[in-house]
Image (cartoon, rainbow, N blue to C red; front, top):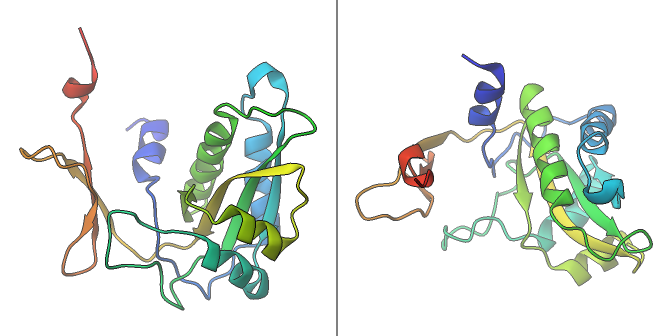
Amino acid sequence: MDPVYNLIQTNRSYRRFVEREPVARETLKELIDLARLSPSAANLQPLKYIISNTAQKNDLIFPHLAWAGYLKDWSGPCAGERPSAYIVILGDTDISTSFGCDHGICAQSILLGATARGLGGCMIASIQKENLRLALSIPSRYEILLVIALGKPVERVIVEEVGPSGDIRYWRDAEGAHHVPKRTLEELIIG
């Protein structure tokens, strides 16, 4: 099988982790280096990053994130299943005031690199940004764009076709497996 296809297929949004298993700062720096090498609109490279891999700093980040909008009865991972690391992606407004899709490209590069290293992660855009800014003392020149939660995943994610109802909402079964409906390739290609 094509290694790129396999890597992308394996890269899922994981929301539960082995919290006690650390992610080394050097690993986080390697992941950010993948983002650094990724394409950037007009090659402005306006993104900056905050690394967190200590329990103390992680505890400052966790309460300002929303975890899974479709899982109404789940407020996020419990203690012991929280991420062991985060990367906060910031836009430097001294370089640009528009970040386009740079942060999405870089976040995907980070997550693919994490997957290749046996880690899992989740891009989180639902952030209490001003609270996080205060918690981490982020200067106002930086716009908070995304938070990537990282760690060794403990949940099983199952990709399946969207059913006859057309419902695309992810869900968890009785065993806790996370099901993610995906539209078929035929439905996506027009003409």
